[in-house]
Picture 1 (tube, one colour):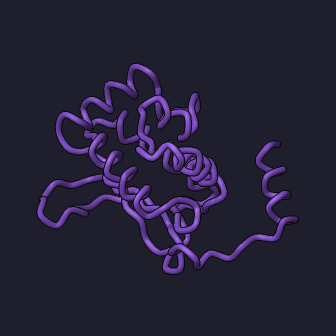
Picture 2 (cartoon, one colour; picture 1 turned 30 degrees about the vertical axis):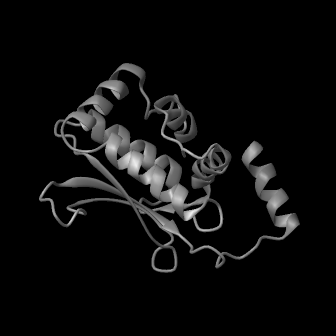
Amino acid sequence: MGDMIKDSTTSDVFHQMNTRMGPNEPVKEMIAVHKEFGMFSEKYNLKQAYRALHIAPSDHGERRKWFRYLDSLVDYKSDKAGVNGHDRIVSALRDNFEGSAPLPVYWLTHLAADDDRVTIGRGTPVPHERQEYMTISLPTVPAGESPKPTVTAARAKQAARKK
């Protein structure tokens, strides 16, 4: 996320996601919302789902950047061959919430230099809990360290998204 959105925005949104999809009642509610509205299906992209769920930065100036970041996940690789990061997240959430033993979801980040893919796993990411979660980890580049694309490359990327 680095140069796309502020660190404080990342913390804010990750707190919201981890709280809204957390253990017990929160994950049960998310399962019910998904079942009723199909939030994590081909019907909606992440930006639309998160807008509907009101998972967004509290800083209104950062919202546009956050939603642009969610759209950019189509350009990320994932831990599943042939599936981009955005679609991997949507399908993992759908499969989890529709599964016979859904897990709460915990969102985290990792350095893109270590692994530039969106990764989905299972584990106990909260050191003081024994609760197992489905984990979704997003690759990030620290602020100021991402290469700046040329204007030509940026326009080509934007045109490709519109197709």
